[in-house]
Amino acid sequence: MKSKTNAKTWPDAKGYFGDYGGRYVPDTLMAPLIELEKAFEELSGKEAFWEEFATVLKTFVGRETPLQYARRLSEHLKGAKIYLKREDLAHTGAHKINNAIGQILVAKHMGKTRIIAETGAGQHGVATATAAAQYGLKCVVYMGADDMARQEMNVFRMRLLGAEVVAVNSGSRTLKDAVSEAMRDWVANIADTHYLLGSALGPHPYPRMVRDFQSVIGIEAREQILAAEKRLPDSIIACVGGGSNAIGIFSAFVGDEKTVLIGVEAGGTAIKPGQHAARFSGGTPGIFQGMKTYFLQNADGQAENTHSISAGLDYTAVGPEHSLLHDIKRAKYMSVSDDEAAAAFHLLARTEGIIPALESSHAIAMACKIAPKAGSTHLMIINLSGRGDKDIGIIQKYDGGKK
Image 1 (cartoon, rainbow, N blue to C red):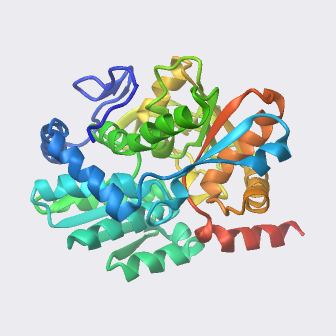
Image 2 (cartoon, rainbow, N blue to C red):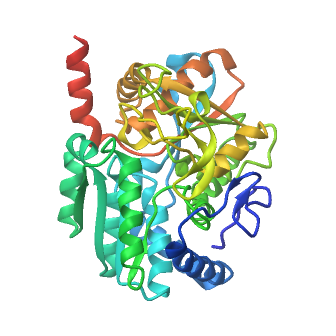
């Protein structure tokens, strides 16, 4: 398998997706980023590397994941014919493992013996700890203290896998602060450490590298929908936090102008400062955590706090490729509220026997708005990015508070 997407020719040599992306980091991080870029460029040109990646995805991760016709959900919504790309069935329960395996292979090639990562909902942390255990590498995961409290099961899973989980008590005690702490660790330990960034964001080459590893989702989905329906979908819906699951499935369809790409952000409780994480509804372009992109900032350029029922979408910025797709109007970005996501969580469980991650529930919730109006000839794919075992406690408390 060689990485291939149907995307335009971006990023450029400096890591820009149009006006977005780049590498805005202190001098201490330039050397390791250049080292990483060179290693990835070398490996990505070798068929043997992609064959090794594909073999591990097949034998360890369990790919390819199914594209399932969601018959009862489609019948319930009385509109579009809906398919689910079942990333929840990948090992560890989410799409995150695809990128974790890819970056671990790069890190091993570079001779790194220690892996660090950030995590929000814990799925990237679990995937990183899993991949590190598989290859015998030391692993440290940074996680916001508030996220640790609402994702206790994933914290325990990471520790079972041998990872050290470090609580981040600064700032909003969520994902953006975990990213900052991981970067500080990397600066101090660049000789033996690889920072396994979990989403398609941050300084170059991460947005491209993560997209390329996650493009397996779109490559599979494209082949599967053509086999099932003999045509491409009319729309694809995916949740967007940092944006890796969305860019992974979008990448194979960007060149197909008739396929509408829809990214779904966290609307939280209201589109007001501190109450949501919808960067395209309340954010503006700027420099944040090593990249130029849309992020939620105040009049002084300081990052605003965010909120979402979903820890994985509770992030201040969005990946730079999504910023470009937004500006050129190739993708639409909308948001759904906590209440809508929670309702979609229950709906998918009761119609399809699938308990989705709260992140994925945002995509389901948007489909609930679009599908009934689309008509029976409309073909839709929802990227079901993860399963909801980790979110059962959150939903229990959320439902209890609504009664």
